[in-house]
Length: 189
Image 1 (cartoon, rainbow, N blue to C red):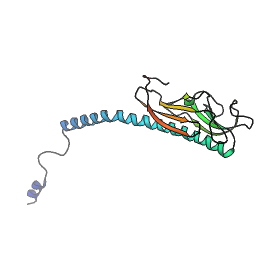
Image 2 (image 1 turned 90 degrees about the vertical axis):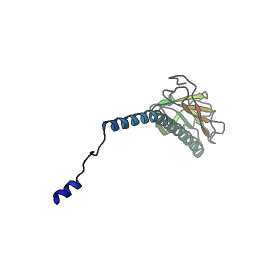
Image 3 (image 1 turned 120 degrees about the horizontal axis):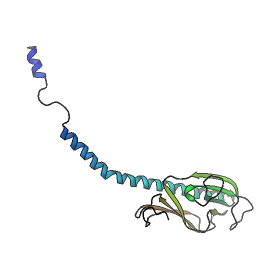
Image 4 (image 1 turned 60 degrees about the vertical axis):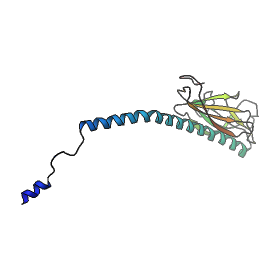
């Protein structure tokens, strides 16, 4: 009797597992799904980098403006690669600093105290598109010395890519906007 029970309880026929055809079909479907998802994922990563860089710039500008109002003195933000001196390339990083008491609106910058430093943001390019000075200066009432616009683009900006623009008008309040790049392949300006 025990022999009969063993035969009845044993599994006969097909074994549990995948056939070669099922495995090939699964791999093919996964490859198709990845082919469709990867470009969209890359766009999402690029847009998140731009948003982060633009938000960091907005935070720096807001800090400079708030400190100017709070301290009743001139406070500026300028591009800086080393966090101690101003340069011309916003993509290298930037710093917020308190101007010396002797500096007046319209005169050359003179750093008294560095208040904040932001390092370069990877895979993005910041370019000044409006404003004549290489720095942004706020007076004691929070108004800027001049209107200013910075564009934040991917480092390989192709036509149709999303870009961000940080603009500062006469009131001094920064505004973040979005637009689409019209530049060619590899264009940065």
